[in-house]
Length: 243
Image 1 (tube, rainbow, N blue to C red):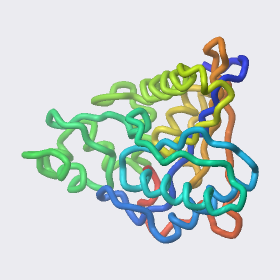
Image 2 (tube, helix red, strand yellow):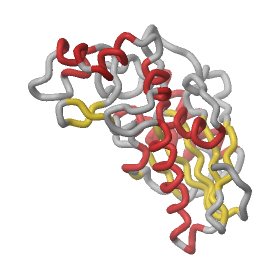
Image 3 (cartoon, rainbow, N blue to C red):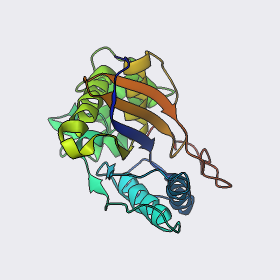
């Protein structure tokens, strides 16, 4: 997937800030907000002009985008920053159970709660989700699964590839930088797709740079923000990873 091309649009994909758990769609912890604000300040201090700030539709990605924008705008002389906008492409993998889309979550009860008429026992009896729940590393199980009930890792990578290429459809975006707040499974699938590298979850507010060339080629590289004294890898307890 990786090749060099003329610079058209750069998409910087970042993981959201810290959350307390993944049993439901919760917002950021106080530390997660601080991480996000610090990342926004760092972008502004580097003089990086951002033509678009996008996020997934979950509370944690929306909170991250809002705090990132506040940090960015809080730096004197920072470039103008548009309001955050939700992008459907930045969602977690599309997985299906009982005819409904579900998110990877902590425990059978949390997954069952997303589907009317499905019990935790039904989840555990599902060939895919039963093994997902008992896996040592849930997202890793999905990443390596050849035929999950929905998108596999390569499908998510192709989705993001198409999303990044589409950012250059507007002639006025040539040379633009777009910041996109997403989730660990998406980022890990992207790296697997572009570099064939299996990786654990990236630190919060870190991710990848994808530059779509004018010929449609995409250049992929790691991207690290600097959150200063605020740890980007801090965790409040078990189960924080895989979001």
